[in-house]
Image (cartoon, rainbow, N blue to C red; front, side, top):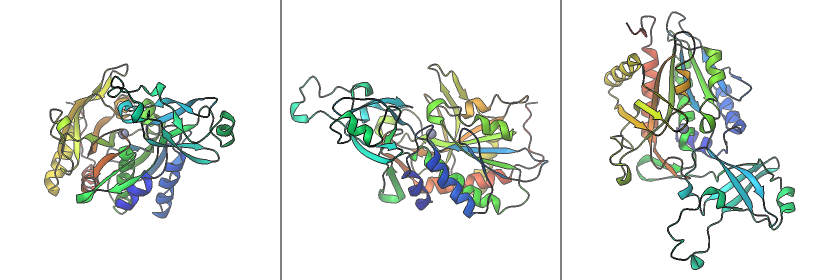
Length: 359
Ligand SMILES: [Zn+2]
């Protein structure tokens, strides 16, 4: 898990530019001997055929990460950014970034005004992203263009990963490369079982952009059940103490409620049969199961639940994550292993008698 996660975290993959991550995912599936297809948006789907009498299951996770798009190159070579996704503006200044050009990755620094010249009124002010600029060493616009940087170039936090004490890892885009790693580990395990339900595994695109990138893959697979793997907000730091009980290292969890109001007006109230399934599976396997309920975030699952004539039974499952969307998120590897165990065992409990009706 550690090697897989490290590999995936070190690959830049802004929303809409997931090809390199997808290439790594497909490489792993090829080595497992599993077939896959990639749709026009870039979603990678791998179907493991099972008992057709059992409800079919879609399990998906997003490959993309938030970041920026080059908006303007100034005459002096400094670069202005447009944001893409939920970028935390107060954690941007002085960050290292990578501009992904057709000629290769170009490193840069998000400029932070020299401290010696920062007045008392500026010290505690957060600069909106539109006021920031990236210094990639260019001294003119032409020099930037010659290096392959142009309006529209994707930009992400400079990929990095390192170990913390106690089996924890810090780095970029753990959201949601950790989900990608768990889904690859799950693919290997499910492929070794016979008699389970048909499972469609999807590594999806553009979640951080519009929360709907997975929809073509969900339409193509038309599942009865959809499980989505992403972060759960870890609440065991002082600044998060009133937000919930989810702790880093406390094991995998499920979301009982998600909602996002601003413009999106969507969320997921999970199907009770799937909540019951996870609770019973965790109990039987002696695995911890944390519970999360919060507003302010949601995933593509919000849209999948409305698909088809019957709707899709949905549940968000996840791993605790600290400092979400910042350049250095923190995860506990034991949570990812336990999440893989939980999902494997839960899927195998979905048999022909598994009921999804609301009678
Ligand atoms: Zn995510």
